[in-house]
Image 1 (cartoon, helix red, strand yellow):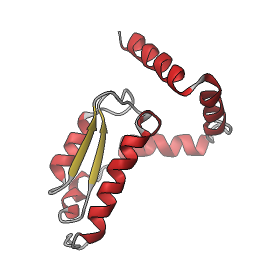
Image 2 (cartoon, rainbow, N blue to C red; image 1 turned 90 degrees about the horizontal axis):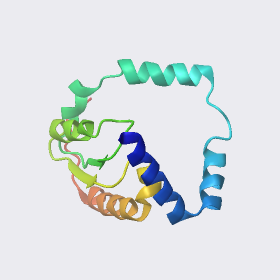
Image 3 (spheres, rainbow, N blue to C red; image 1 turned 135 degrees about the vertical axis):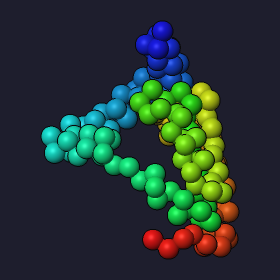
Length: 130
């Protein structure tokens, strides 16, 4: 069922952006395969990097959390965990976006980021010291 859903989403996305554009982007993004060292480092980060105990230090700093609710690679619940752990954070949810959020919702994401940065520029800095 998940594979069928992903295939439908990919077909719709390909139709929306065009086959040529998609192939150009994929060729650029994956022109060089990741090195073995890079792969190992990424896996180590996935399994061992845990900053949850430090998230509360961001209280008072403008923090935007972006949640693609159809992400198949990163559990979307993790965005909610971040939001709950960072007092005063803002969360923006995209129900019909996945791990490719930047390409799937580029204009909407850009608008949310501009709004956040505009607010963040005038917000006082009151976060706890490191």
